[in-house]
Amino acid sequence: MRLRLLTFALFFALCPLPFALVEAQSSPTSLHDAFDAAQCYAYTAQIAGFGERMPGSAGYKKTQDLVEQVLKRTGATIDRDEFTASTPRGPIAVRNIIGKYHVTSDPNQRIVILAGHYDTLFKPGFIGANDGASSTAILLSFADALAKQKTANQVWLVWTDLEEAINEFQGDDGLVGSRHLAQKLAAAGLVPRVRGLFLLDMIGDKDLGVARETISTRWLQDFVSQAAQRLGYTQSFFQYEVAIIDDHKSFLDVGIPSVDVVDARYGRMGPTFDGMGEFHHANTDTMDKVSKASLEIVGRTILLTVELLDR
Ligand SMILES: [Zn+2]
Image (cartoon, rainbow, N blue to C red):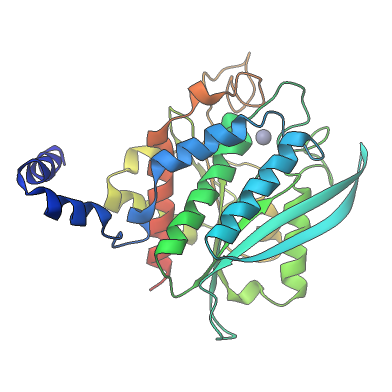
């Protein structure tokens, strides 16, 4: 790998300028090569910079506006799934945002869904650079890539709302937006057309280690393994197993094959820390814990997975 990079650098150093410019401007040859990690990191920083993003907050509204701006700019068909949830905090307005790409007139066209939550925990001072901002941002970068590269399947980007529990993940608390949307898809008879759903959560961690989440659909997870292997990223995926209640559960419950792409070890682990690490749901979940390299590994792997499912 190092040798190939060196050859590439030499080629650009030696070739005449006009040719180098043409090369630099040519469009990517695949969906995963269209992933822009620097832009993804910039989106993450921008969203974390909005501050607390619990439903109804100023940061939450700014996030919604950014998502809808990017969807418009990239030519998506935009859908909103809006409702009022009754919660332990009283009624809360919930909005899942959906952007659809490469929709054809074929009524049987298969659908691939890439999802992630954009709300943050109801906790003063919590800005969720990794838990909330990274998942929101990676979907924005997927929008940019999808605007450049066509797929045979429809690809839906879904920003789920009110994933975080108001009190704790018990009964109907938590996964509120995803549960509503999953039931809506089931009622519309769309479940058989969904090839697979990938839920991205906490994937910006500098010390990246995506869990083999055990309630996820195993055969669909194997596509992610295959993509990671092809890109030389196997060390970052599936080195430990854990079961996690996350938005993918809502979609599994209606019969949609789903995988939670989640790094479940955030910072030091141990009995004195949260079960998902010292920075999980802590006000120390800030941009210094996030890296461009991690966003790149996950972004390219998931987009290559989308390509593998396109065949
Ligand atoms: Zn969380």
